[in-house]
Length: 132
Image (cartoon, rainbow, N blue to C red; front, side):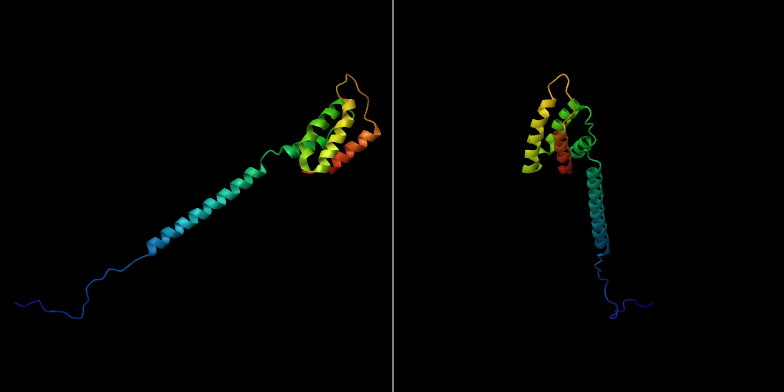
């Protein structure tokens, strides 16, 4: 019988190899997930801001489409909707006070006549200086 216990000197023992590819893959997946969440948040905020009701825009539209032939309702509407833009600047505040005083003659009465030319000019000037 042969003896198989021959010492071998050229074969090295098995070493543990450090493998980091799984960690790299998990980190890459987490980074992609965070980026996708960020993009989804940005799109959501943009969509929400786009579809939000804007009271200033609505009052601006109502003031621009106001029927000045219906004097009493126009006077009340100008006073109500103009209040939205009153605090934009000191110029807007003064103009709102001025137009409110001029519209007092067309409110609180059973029947009123048409706007005179001076009041119509002030209304057009006030509508022209509004912006959203």
